[in-house]
Length: 346
Image (tube, rainbow, N blue to C red; front, side, top):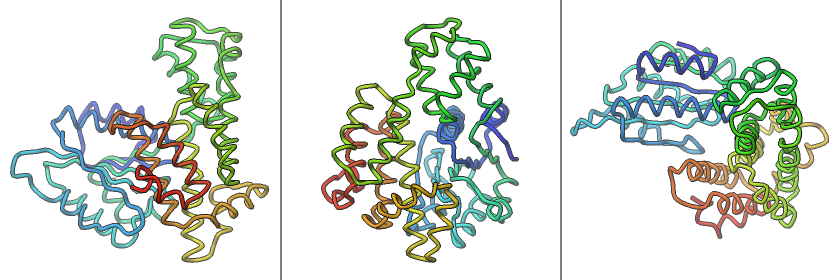
């Protein structure tokens, strides 16, 4: 079963819990909320034990076989999550996924969280196996009227409303970044409560500066400018910008660098990777300069550190997410710092 949005997934989950789910896409807020919906339904059904696997670098696929196909001696029900950022499990991984999906123990529910899938992946045996036995939810960036509908629904949830011009103003201010949009709506609710928002309310409250500072942060990271990076981080913290917005920006840049590093090491097709990620010509040099500072292993370590910071923001793990973010940023500028930070080097 294939679904096109989180709303459809919610309706399907209300009817029954399936043994396997694939949530793919490159829009982090919707993807995270989709996975949270599945987790909630699984917990309600008694799947209380959670095991998480990350497919990065060399991965032992036997771990997934053991987790998914073993029967529990103590009647425990397990929620198993497989993070597949690239959306490409490789030959061995594809074979294992097809096997475990078709033979999944009744004690287990499997969630596969992947990046955006290409045409080859969607025609693969492992994808079709998930389609046959479970649910595939694909999340897409929202544009035009779909973004306006999403904003209206989000305001409704807070007991707020505005006219079409207000929705358009809010949409223009966040430029499709749903993490930033969610933060702005939360801010509006704190400022005004459950009311009808005027254009002036939105104009006065929506902060374009914080959004632009996130992109200033990524520019300083690519340049390796630690002093400016720390200054911008201090400003973002002072403006109370949500940590997930910063993590979204960090993850995007780190995934690009990891992909570039991998292609440079294997095929040398760096230009095609830059094109894939729609890197503007005037920024290519910045990425190549940053690439020369670190290795594939180091970029992958920083991606894992972002995942750690995200778990802290959700209360799944103890710690200070802003401290971890600061360490990630410093190691982004100078990858040799990874050896100094236990939190980042995990």
